[in-house]
Image 1: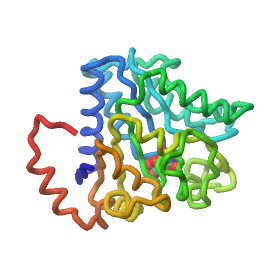
Image 2: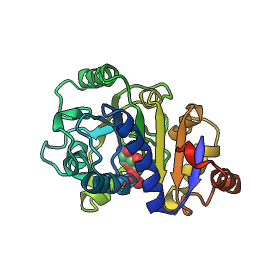
Image 3: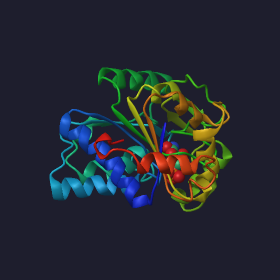
Length: 260
Ligand code: GLP
């Protein structure tokens, strides 16, 4: 696992570099898309590169990590709409090439199975962007999630509802109680995992993710078992890392050609 500690804007540029290099090499790249505030600066940077430098998503495919259950199709916080607004519609990405689990399906387990199949049919995810919840969840795999789980319905913890209330006018009662989420086993099949975290409130989750024992109590720790995982954090989110100096030293002496 590689840990990079840098200011937020620099982290966003690094993640965008990794995505750009995939898209330039293979326009049909499959990108894994995350919601939440953590990837927003990456999306801004990608939109800028599209507008100013001709970076194209025209042939790319995108798969979202998760979706709330039951939010109306036109609800602005429905993750499908968030991804459309934050990235897909800001670049040349055809809408039908970006998919997410269907939180409005009448048969939710069937929708989850169909989603898994569509990721497989696309050849799997090349690069998966991730954020992390304060309780260590990735996508919506809350503590206690099976480390081998697949796309399925989950109940949000009260903590996640409270954390996400800011997207629902601060009203925790308006945050949905259920979601569909790629499982940890699904996420682990992506070829490169790139997790972004900023702010002091993420410090404990980041410490556990990088340095804690692998455990369903901190679901993100499963990433320690991934052969190509990158953790991009600012100083505040890195503030509890035991080996921070070593990560700094390693990154500072990394050859330029290596990339993430
Ligand atoms: C939500 C999303 C996750 C995200 C997490 C952290 O629960 N389902 O994918 O990583 O929140 O969000 P933020 O980046 O806003 O801190």
